[in-house]
Length: 389
Image 1 (spheres, one colour):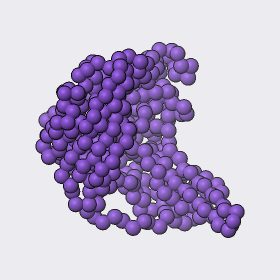
Image 2 (spheres, helix red, strand yellow; image 1 turned 135 degrees about the vertical axis):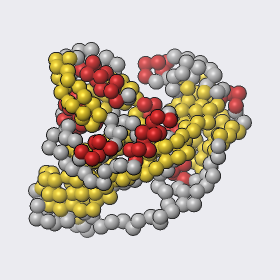
Image 3 (cartoon, one colour; image 1 turned 90 degrees about the horizontal axis):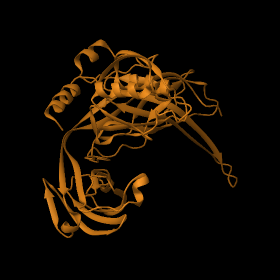
Image 4 (cartoon, one colour; image 1 turned 45 degrees about the horizontal axis):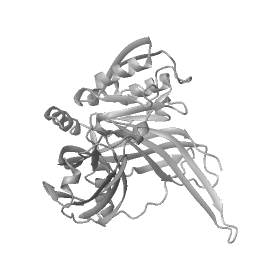
C-alpha cells in the first residue's frame, strides 16, 4: 500500500460525512463541504456513441482502478442485450453513481464482493442495473443501494402457528480507493410506513463490547457489501416504507503485511514467521493438474476474539500461486481455536485452464491487516414500495 494512498485515505477518514441523502438521480452529489474536503474518487466523462469498453476504460483510468469483464469478450458484440455504442455525460460524479449510469446504458453490473487485487469485474446484468439495481443513497465515501424487500408468511398445520419473516436487501458500495477489511451489520434507527407504524423488529441483545465478530480480514479494495436487514411487517401494514434511517460501520485497512512462502514443497513442516503471525504447511500433494495443501496459521489471541473471525482471515487472506503466477488455491474448510487455525485448500487452475498441469514451485502468500480504522456512514430512504400480504 503506497504512502500516497495512505495520506489520501487518512485525510478521507477525518472528513467522512455523518449525514446521508436519498438522491433523485444516480449522479446526485453530496454536500459541497464533503466534496471539497474529501479525496473522493470523482469521474468526468463526456463520450457519445462510444463502444462501452472504451467508456469503461476511461472510468478505470480516472479512478486508478483496474477493471475487467467476465467473459473477456463481454463487449465484443456476442451478447444481444449489450449495445454496440453508448453515451455517458457526467461531471465530477462520484465513482459509483457514475458507474451506475454506465451500467444502465451498457446493461452490465459489477460482480459482488469487491476489488480484490485492485480489480473490479463487470458482467452482463440479468435485470436493469439502473442506480445499480435499486434506489441509491449517497453518503460521503459510501453509496447505499436498497434493492428490494422480502416478506414471507408461513403456517404450521399441527398448531396453526403463523410465522413471519421480513427483510430489506441493502448493498453498500465503498469508494474504490478505500480498502475494506471488515464490516458490521447495519443498524436501523427508524423505519415506519405512511401511517407511522414502526417496521423495526425488536433488537437482539448486543454482544459484549470486547467481542469482535470479524476483524483483521484481508482488505478488499472498494468493497461491495450486500446484506439483508431484518424488518417486521405487521398484518395490515401500509403500502409504503415512508422513512427509513440507519447507519453502517466498516473497517478500512491503513496498513497490511505479507507472509510469503516461495516453495510450498520445500517448506512442508517448517514454521515461517512474519510479525506476530506464523504459518506452517502441514501437507502438500500435487498430481498433474490437481492437488491439495493444508496449512496452520497462528496469531496472538485477542480477548473476545471469535474463532470464526480468524478462520475468515485465513480463508480470505491466503492466496496460492503456481510457477506462472496463476492463482490456484480454492479454499475448502478448517478447524481450530481463536489463535490457531488449520485450513485446507484444493489446488486447480481456474476456468478453461483447469486441465493444464500445475507447475512448481508453488507460492503461498498470507496478507493480513496490521493497522485499521473504523468508519460509520448514515443512510436514509423514503417512499419505498412495501410487499403486500
